[in-house]
Length: 349
Image (cartoon, rainbow, N blue to C red; front, side):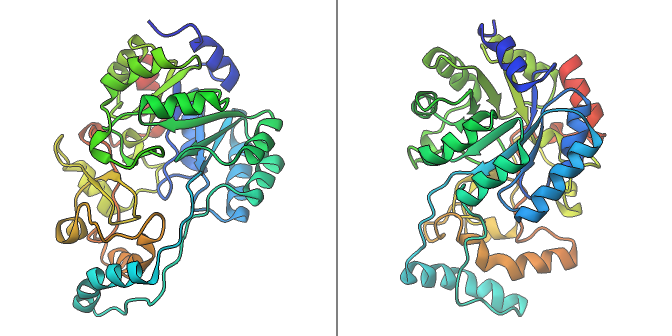
């Protein structure tokens, strides 16, 4: 049975249904968040790739469309610029691909994603989201205290029992237990061995037993059966992402949608070649050519900046040869239906 804090978590988050939208950077904005909120779930806006003015616009758009709680998601990674030698090794790996495409390879790399900092904390203080969630751990204590002072519920992702205990010890309101099946970036932050990551059915009961805060299940959940199973293992709610990628409200590119429509259960791979961190997605030319896991990939988030020109060529040709197509292992279950309908089927099934 779900643990005793399930109802209290839904009350804390202002929800009537135990469903959270996964904050999928690059393919989700306020449109998807609004649809899930209208279906009684928790809408989410991924802030990692958005400039502050764009984030304000998306929050205003959400607030103008629906009276519902909102989750703003941020990355809490440690930014470690790579050495010049590491940059040259990565450039050498990517140089043939650029030459074949007739594209110039940049000399320098850029981060592209900022960890949660004072500017982000100030924005949270202005926008007052009901929920703030983090990936890759938590920001430093003084920044977390500023978030907590706004009254927002604080969530963060754990991929192991040790990470869940670490988060609970720092006062999060709930732990998002991310199984091996999940699409997108692994939330791992205490250890770097991707082979040691745990499947959701094994992870959930161990995390539920290990912490005294509510647990939210993430990874491979795409319908009501997954919700029922997660609740039976003691969780308070589920977080779902891949199931919404084919909805019209998602910003998923056409080549990504085509790949999802033809995906099978064994298609997804864990890769680091797009950003420098392990993440699960559908295979493409880049993953087959130099990965899916490359020892030469620059640390997150620097690896991706040298792929910008190749990704631009993908957009011109409507192909996904060099662009990440994040998806979890339940990708074949993603429906071509409205996000509202998908969410209602999950919570009403």
